[in-house]
Image (cartoon, rainbow, N blue to C red; front, side, top):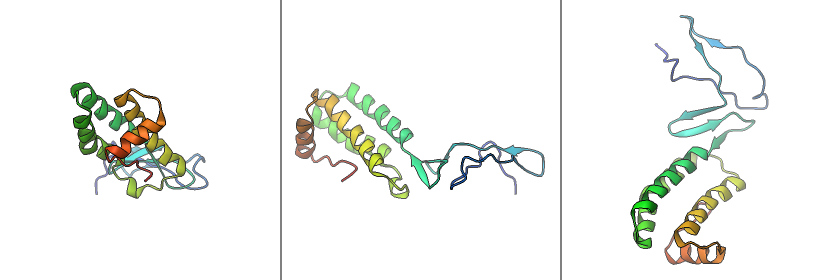
Length: 142
């Protein structure tokens, strides 16, 4: 079996994840590199003591898509429907496979709240929560 070394990498998960490891070399002399983060099926897995996923790439994808929608649409209702249909899936993709901590959920909620702050040009969290409830927009922690 041929292994593509450009797409392969090694990652340690467990109590000794910080330990240095010898390079993994294949029979034909190529080496598979050790990394701190890897992508597998769209999920970014991070080197850690326990299985952990990185949400940074998902948040960047959401912001990129939301800013594109926000820049091109004038109506709030249309913007929110496009955000629900196109941007939220980028943020919430594969979260069922990731063990999320309370701080991870708060981080995802912050992304949504920040978008509402920008859309309705307010800094009052009560107004943001009212708008989310009015438009039927559930936070990821819910």
